[in-house]
Length: 266
Length: 245
Image (cartoon, rainbow over all chains, first blue to last red; front, side):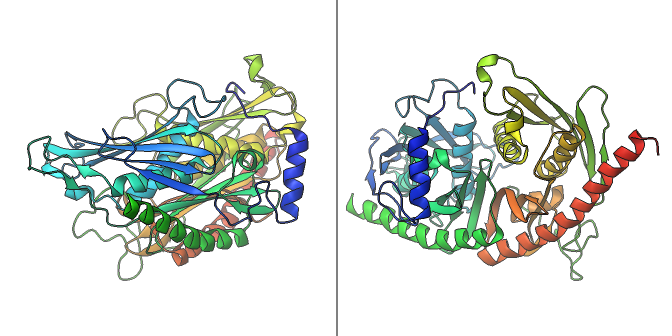
């Protein structure tokens, strides 16, 4: 491999797989539990909305910047949403500086699809003058510490940041005050890995590296699925699809409560 | 999914027929041909509706640069690429974020299908060239890629068969064409190992309920069985030609 790779010692790998066969995980969780989650709202004060998320030892900062730009020629009556992810070298000895690699691109595209396809951000309400000026919403995901499951951490951060985003109408002279960005729904993702024959939620780094399948489902509070992504070399059975969808519904609603609670507290 | 539907456009009529006259669970016309290139180790060409896709496979061959080699297995690399003239608007040559993502998923998937442990230090390269695109290019590309791999004589767990289903005018429909993809509500590409009943590739974007996802999956499963038969036919035809029978 050209890129640096995480190395998991064989002894540890065997141990993790053996634990899984007994329904256990190395950090003591059961298969359906998330690691402790904390969300700090407004970490980046210069951003129009931001959140710093810890998911176990994984840390992600998401900043939302909002600026004025021209609409895309084929959508003159819609604002612009752009999602980008950076796997910053602070996050892992295997992350190298440079333009986004395939992992960063995949990460940002999953977050983008989950939000865009659910129409969570009403882009038609972000038009200043049709065909000329619209609001551009930039979601930047900064992964600063990598211990697995960047997708769910980033999605939590993106939703928390967007929920607290204020469109800077005052700065551009459109009004005297910034206007809150209103979301139409609150989509979140749940990520599973398959380790041996077992499906587990919210993989830590070791579990992620040892797994044969990673699968993410994005769902809003109405139970509408807006994104699915399977990656890695392994296979899934059709009865596992059922489990994945059912658990996503339960888990995304738990996560939604955590996001809303952290916003109320801020 | 991304485009606003022109007012009055109906994707499904009162007889449940689609814009191109198909039923909801009907595939577009498909033609597969194996062994279409001279220099590649394996190749296949697929026409799937208005999609025209060419796949070349090279390998197992020595992997350069050497530091990229894996002493325990072959490295599978894939490139999904759209020709500049493949769509209405010219596609700028070079990787896009979309093509990088699709290529990553396809390479990962095939590294679980090919017996890569048989070929340490080598590379197996899959080049998917979309010459004409009309929605469903990744699934058509995967279906053809697995034929090209078989043509190259690369040992695999089985043939991978891929197809998409989506949602148009509120109906779940198989194998969306470009117009349906543009103005529909969701698209879900999937690939499977038909004989083993395993899902090996799965993406979805748009808006679907759980029930709709189930319906779409069962449509894809049925379609993949038909496609799998076509794949086997295409391979047999290749061997008949080779042996001059």
